[in-house]
Amino acid sequence: MKNLKIFLIVCSFCMFGYVSSAGIRIVNELKNKKTLWIRCYSKDDVLGPTIIPNGGHFTDYFFHNLFGTTRFMCTLKQGPGFRHNQSFRAFKKSGLWDWRARDDGIYLRRIYKSRFDDGVENLRKEQDWIY
Image (cartoon, rainbow, N blue to C red; front, side, top):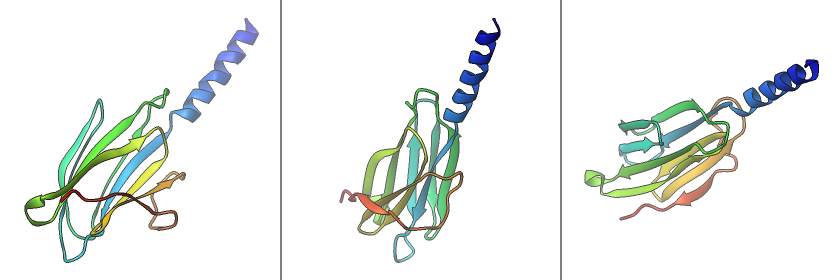
C-alpha cells in the first residue's frame, strides 16, 4: 500500500510537469502602417476576430492537455480590404509559438521558456500570403 501511494505521488508530479503553460503570439511587422486581422480557434476556444495595429501584437497563454493534442488554427488577413490571407496551424503540442506577419510572409520562432521575449533568433519563414 505504501508503494502504491509513492507511485501515485510520483505520477502526479510527472503529470503536473507535462501539463504546463503554452502560448501563441502574433506580431504585426507589416510595413506602411497596415493592420492585421486575426482569428484563431481550437477544439474548445475561439480567439478573435481581432485587429492588430502596425507594431502591435496578440498574445494568448493557455495550458495544453496531457496527451499533447492541443491545436490552434489561425487565419491572418492583411492588405486592402484584407484580401491577402493565410490559414495555418499556429500551435501544436507544446512551447511558445511566436508568429511574425511581414509583407513577404509569415515567420515562426518556437521558444522553450516560460514567457515570450523580443528576440529574433531562429526565426524562419513558414507561410506565404495568398493573393
